[in-house]
Length: 556
Image (tube, rainbow, N blue to C red; front, side, top):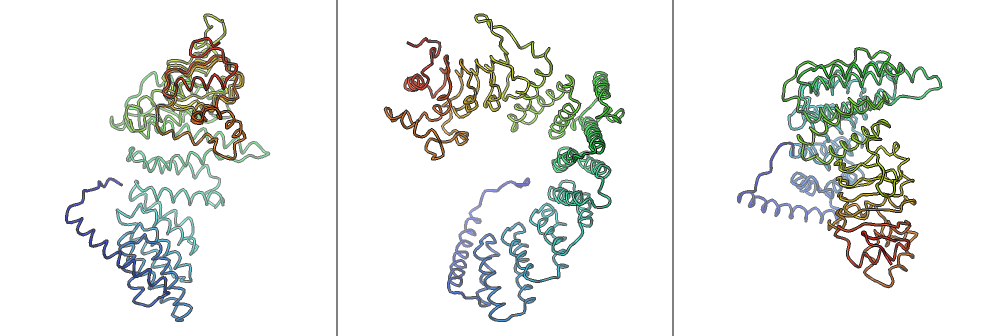
């Protein structure tokens, strides 16, 4: 974790662990004895203190200290401040050993809530912990600082300045960035002077976070904060008077325009004429919509030369792809040049970042479909007549798609060919209510569960799901998205039980039953899947009385 590799235990370490375990067992036995017998003497508390130092995550030990605290306060009539100071001292010793102990931090909050109003020492302790390299990102300490700030009514502006100092000291501080977003959310919500209207302040925040990502483009802290900032720009408020809304929309588009420019600057090693032409086309299209880009003439300029290695910054490329798609959605033009650029970015990311290949592949597929469906002209290129029936088919086969989308542009489709792709899901396909013929062969569909959208396609008559991976995976993690027939909430439990009475083994096909039972399929191709055998074929014939063709063979 955090770049520290785990080392194999040596014989000396093993011997030390055995001795530590023996001591722990002895201390735990003593704790349980004292706990069960309500013994809260000084000796018992000292023994407990040794236990929480060695095992600070043993919550029973901390709960025992709470009981002892209350007992000594109510019975012994001890001084409250003295008891609190002693407890805080024990917790501080534990935190010096393990500064990320949940139990220790929770117990410290509980102790302070009992009446100690002095928090000067608490802030000194936090400053000490957060000033250390290992503790600067300790989210427990940051959470406790928020607790102390609220407890003592420390202003959000003062705390915001503290996060600024911490970030300036080290840009790679996730907790400081997160705390900054928490504080700013409150300041913006309260419309505190200097933070409202938010346009000017958020513009300054973009400049602040940009200095972080440009200093170290491969560090993700600033990028996450940048995404949060973008989210704030689109939270506009509706009003009867539309002028404030329109002003916010124009400003929002302007900000995204600026961000595209800055991250293209970060990524672009050279400025080419084609890119200049692309940008001019984008500005021309933007100018046709005065609502969005009244002041965007000089907002997006091409970049100066950057270091070659920065052109391979993965998170910068991902952010740029998202920004370009947001920009394209705002100007509502489906600009081919923008979509082409985004497809190129996702293709590069698939090569640069193999562990997240599937995510980039899915996003690439969605952008490709948006490009295909961007206009009637481009969509017609993928339409053709069936050679036998003469019906019009939309053929999106052999495009290496792993995910499908843009269904709002495909509601008219009756015949769809998605074969020879890499689909592992057909989520959203249920929107195509007119669909009568569907080819999903030669994909990567792993179970009947992923076919759940088919249940709503009541017009479906021809279905080809041959040569997929149905039944190939021993554990299907998606099956829990489909209700089991054993669930008492299913309305078709009794029907399925009646259906399976003559063959006890048929109960293994309940997923297929839930998918196909309401369909009126006349032609089905299902060969090439591991789950398919002769018994399953007989099951389908019984389940689908209107079935006339099965795997290319006419049924009697």
